[in-house]
Image (cartoon, rainbow, N blue to C red):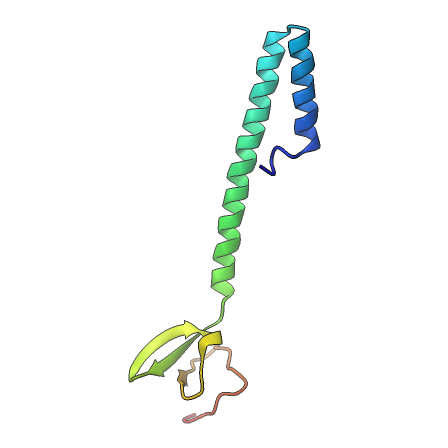
Length: 103
């Protein structure tokens, strides 16, 4: 409901009330339509922005390829534990406390 909590919307609602008091029904309908369209567009845009931000966040989350129990698994880098064998390829970020087995 962040879209409704806006000074412009408050002014338009006040104008709607004033137009209704003056019985200007066409203006009331027009202003109501403008408010509804504005809120709808705002909600849609906010939803798209949140999805885009989540996608970027997931892309930037560091991951690591480790060998656990003989199987190669991709996990979040924060879940690396002592004893994990980390497979590193060109361009990967390397945790500072990794012991190099083979170069």
